[in-house]
Length: 67
Image (cartoon, rainbow, N blue to C red; front, side, top):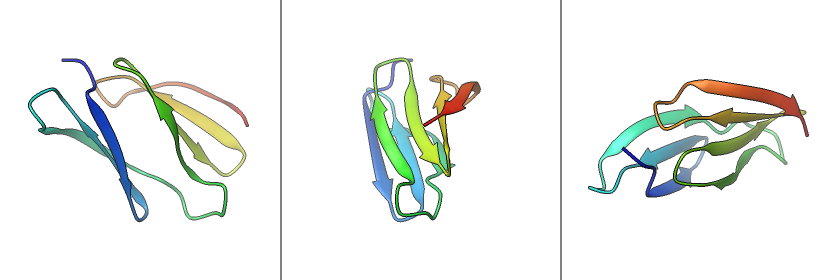
């Protein structure tokens, strides 16, 4: 099911589907530059430290690259 919305609340990022149900939650990190960087209907990008992680619609890490 496609990603419809992503919201960061404190140190957690919640990913929602089209029915407004939480698909999964991930840590947003704790650093000053950490947190949600963007999303599409298929992927979510989150910076934690010096890395940007890309998660798919199932919450699996598909890549980690330098910020």
